[in-house]
Structure formats: structure tokens, C-alpha cells
Image (cartoon, rainbow, N blue to C red; front, side, top):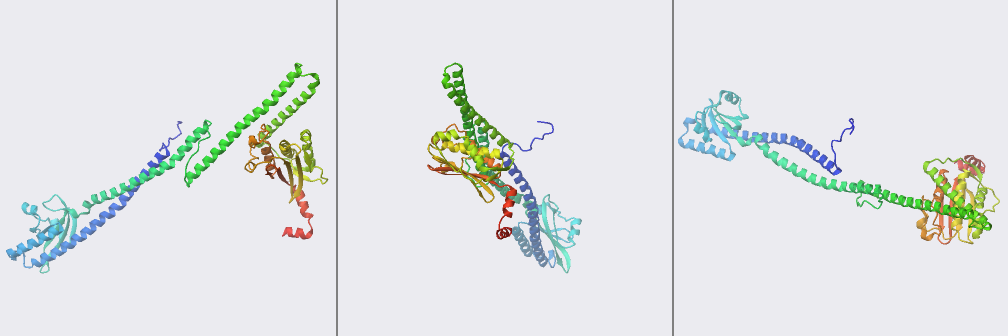
Length: 503
């Protein structure tokens, strides 16, 4: 690793990274939720308990004040016992300690036995000063105790003056004592939710990463030449769409690989057969095996085979130029029927050998097309070669050129077996050939129609194929007229029609 390259913080599979990020998100959520909930819950518990405890202390102070109107010493023994029983009942119901002190802070009564046994209970002057301001509530330590209490103090009166204080202390009512319990409950709920989220996330991450792993494995197989692998995913989301696109790509690669292999096999055969024939006949002439009177015939065969090699090389060169984008279209007007006639004349011998009827070359009207004459010559050559090849003996080949909507339409039709509907839409594909079991021309490379279509598309035209099995096959392509000719035709329209055209 280079010095300037930083290693990713999170490494590993998609599954691990997704799980790690989910866990981090859950931890952050736990911290936020805990922080947001703990403080409000703590404040709520503190305020509610403080209010309740203060209410009790006020009620008990009022009771103590009523009972001790004449002073504590004026109470009979029975009244003191009733007073003590009442406060103990209050203490028991509230689970709190009730302590009564006089205005000096000295102990009068308490329900806390430990305070009674310790003796010498005295409220500090500092606390008395706080008590003098009226009701008081706080959290702290009481005298003679090391425990922290939640304390509520309310004074009681005699003759309009404070005669003492009622102190209610309760250790379990302080909010801080409840926070751990709330925290445990809250954290338990959060961790249960996190566990559910992690489980669901794990399932989701696994289901998401599995097709990606399958695609990666299939890609590795493609790299070594195995194009049979496919990703089997039945989903309608983006992963499913990616899997479908991957399978389509795999089908295309498999088809391309099949065509490539067929192409290599066909080219090898196309090269080997004529070269073997040429070598055999030349050797026969040179060593005298072929008599002198037959040498002219075999030299003609050699010449045909050389022409066949020349056509193969021309097709390969055209294919290379098309794939590299080197073809440049030089458009000009040319006589359409003259071009067709010149191309058809090159197949004169094959046409005569099959006794084919030629239709449409005797038209007197000369029609001009607009395009690259040499490239259109090659298109017509490929179409006519295809027609001559697949037309049976005593069949026909028909040609037609017509003008329609500022376009020049070329038609090449031949009788014969035609093309099946399932093959018709594929005939213009590179290296495609009709099923060999239905074709007597197994040495065709499947480039002629592909080159023809590419040239027509470079002219911004279009080419189509029509066929009726066992009857005919027809190829039609069109070229746009020259801009000047289109403008001239519009100007030559009748005035009324020209007016409608402008509208």
C-alpha cells in the first residue's frame, strides 16, 4: 500500500459492514434515548414524590398542632398513647419516619426507634433557621443518621406562633433511588429492541449480500470462460433489478461468446477451404498431375477461390472499420437503378447457372438516391449475394426503386424458403446465421446483413426484412433525399398544397 493511500475504516463483506453500522446506530440511539428520558423521569419522580410528601407533612403538622394546643405536657397518658399510635399509623401507611421537635429543635416524638435509643436528638441551628421560613423540603442527612433522606418539614402553631416542627423523612422516595430501577427497565427495553433490530438487520443484510455474492462468483466463472452461471433472485426491488440486468448481461455474453466461437470456426473454414483448393490445384498444375488441356478450367476454379478469399477479407476489413468507427460517409446523388444493375452484373454467372428470373431492371425511369455510392454498392452487393445464394433454381429475384415522402426506397426480393418469424428479428445481428439444419450454405459467416444494416444506419436511414416461409424473402431500405432536392420539391408544389404545407 502506498504511503498516501488510506486503508478504509470498515473492511470486510457487505454483511459485516451493514451489521457494524446498524450496531453503531443502535448504540448512538441508546445514548440519546437514555439521556433524553432519564432526566425527565428523574425530575418527574422527584417532583411528584416531593409534592406528595409535603402534603402529608402539612396534614400531620395540622393534626399535631390540634392535639398539642395546650402543650405536650398537658396531655394525659392516654392522650399521649393515642397521639403516638396515630403518628405510628401515619408512619406505617407512608413507610416514612415521622419526627416531632419543639421550636428549639429538641426531640418530642419520633417513630424511629434508632433515634429514640440514640438519645440527645437535636436539630442544628442551621436547619432551624431554614425551618423558620416555613415549609421546607430537601434531600440530605438527618442528625444521628448516616443515611440520606428526602425530608419535608412543616411547622405547627400555638397561639399564632410556631411551637414546633413536623419532620417526615423517607429514604425510598428520593428520585435518585428510583433512577436505577427506571434505568434497568429502560435499558432492558432498549436492548430487546436492539436485539430485534440486529436480528432483522442480519436477515436483511444476508438476503441482500447473498445475490451480490452469487454475482461475484458468476463473474469469476465468466472470467475463466464459463458462461452458464446465472443469479436466481425473485425480488422486485433494486437487487432484483440488478440480478435481472446481470442475467441479461450473462445471456448477452454467452450469445456473444457463442457467436465469436462460430465466427472463428467459420473464418478458419473459409480460409482453410479455398487455400487448400488453391494449393492443391496449383501443385497439380506444377507437377503435371493435371493435364495441360484441363489447366484452364482449374485455373478458373483457383480464380474463383481467390475472389472468395478477397470477399472474406473485404468483409473483415469492413467489420473492423465499423467497430472502430472509421467509416466516413461521403454523400452525393447517384443513379439508383444503374448501381443495382452494376452489382447484379457481378453475379451473372451464378444467376445463369440457377436459371433465375430477374425482375425490375428494365425500368426506363431513372431515380436518383442521395448517399455514399460505394457504401450503398456494398449494401446492395450483400443483399443480392444473399438473394442469389438462397434462391432455388428457376426462382426469381426482383428489384425495385421508388420515391416516397422525400425518401428513396430500395427493395430486393427473392423466392425460396424464406426466413422463419423467430429468425427474422435476428438476421441483422453480428455473426447471426439461420439454423444450419435449414441452410445449405453453412460457410456463411453472418456478417453481410449486419454490415448492410450498419451502413444504412450511418446514412440515417433504416432497413427491414419481410418474409413468408416457403414463398419469398424481401429486404427494404431507404435513404433520405438531398436537402436541396427536398426544398426544390416543396417549392414545386401547387400553390394551394404549398399553402397547406406552410399551415
